[in-house]
Every structure is written in C-alpha cells, then in structure tokens.
Image (cartoon, rainbow, N blue to C red; front, side, top):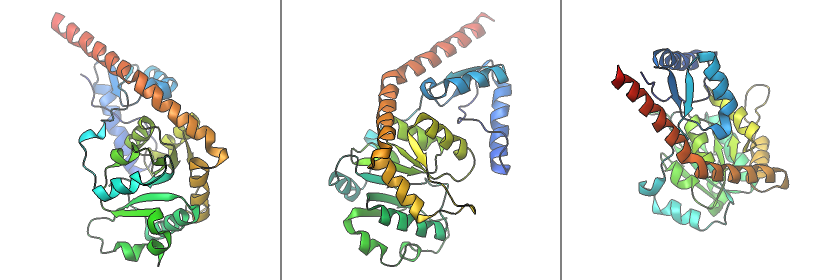
Length: 281
C-alpha cells in the first residue's frame, strides 16, 4: 500500500496537535508497501529523507514541491494593480494562511514593524470565525493613513501563489507551514519566518540552514517585537547583509524549475514497479 502524501519534515515529539499529526504519519509509514511519498525534493532534504529511510526501513521518495502554477487563480484587480505599481522585489507579502491567527497584540506589533520598516507591503489579515473584531479596531490608530499607498491590507482571502509569483514581491513574512515554504521556494521569494506551532519550528530551521530565509526572533516571553520585525524585513529584502539570502532564494527557484520533473519521473517509476509486482502475484 502507498501512503498518502505526508508533509515534511516529520516531528514526533511536539504537543498534542503535533502528536496527532505524527501518529497519522507513523500509521502511514507502517501501512506502506515499502515506499513512502513525501512532498519535498532532494535538493533541500536528501540527507534527512535518506536518514528517515534508514529509520523507517522504507524507501522515501520525494515527489517535488507540488505547487501548481496559479494561472487560473483569481485575484482582485486592485491587488494586481497595486503590485504592478511597485518596483521589482521591493514589496513584502505577509500572510499566515487560514488556519493561524495573530492575537491583537501581535497584530499591533506586526503593524508597527511593517510601518517602521519603511517597506511596501501587502498584508492579508484574517480573524477567527465569529470574532467581532473589525480591521479598524485591530490595527493601530491612524496606521492606514500613515502608511498610505505604501501598504495594502486585505481582510479575508487573497491568492497566495498569485502574489508570491509577482515580480514586485521581495520577501514573504510566513508562519513557515510546509506548503507555504514550498511555494516561496518555487517562486524564489526569501522567507521572513514568524513561526507559531506544529512543524513550523523545524521548517524554519531548514529555511535558515538552506540560506533562503531569516527568522524573526521573539523575546524571552515568546512575544513579537516591532523592532525585530522591522529589522529582519529590511535585512532580507533590501540591506547588504541579506544579499546572500536573496541570491540563494533565486538559485533554489532555478533548481526547482530545472529538476522538478525529475522528482515526478522517479515517482512514476516507483509506482510502475509496484504495479508490476502486484500483477505478477
């Protein structure tokens, strides 16, 4: 039996939600027929997938990032027009997808960090269903007026892939969920890592190890600080210290583009072999 795709890296010893995810992944490993397909690619995780293969006594097969080109994804005209008016690699995209929400305090620190960075930004803000907090209530007083056209705040949903592929985006403030990491790498956008829980800490470690992103450090109490947010954004997107990060992000994009089909070809070969064995029996 072939397992369903499992997000990588696999983490077994995190609190409850992570433990449940690990249990599901472990079950998939145990039920597999000898191979396990994982959404990653060898260019970034070969040493880890090879080691996992030894531990699990299963062949680990990378299937690539599995990021579809957003050709048919709809995006609001005003967002595209805003992006089109920005210089290449000059704007920051901020999004934590639909599963994670910043607290009011974190929204305030993020807002001040973006304002103090003096960078252009597009920020997708979401609130938990049923929350009666409005965007105006959550943001610092006068924030939207002060940033003016330098910033765009979108409440609800926006096409992450459509925005990430745009030439004006030079950095991605992300929680480092695995799909977001894959999308950022595919489109060559450096990551400003603002992790929260589950597999995000090891994902952020991998991002820094590869040299394609920098983590926003929290204080001793785990709180965001606006000064740190602004500092890391500027380092990654415009300052000399982040030049290596920007170069490596573009290099990784090219590697994914050039070798992406090789991963899928390898998956096809493995599946053909399994089907052939089943037919012989």
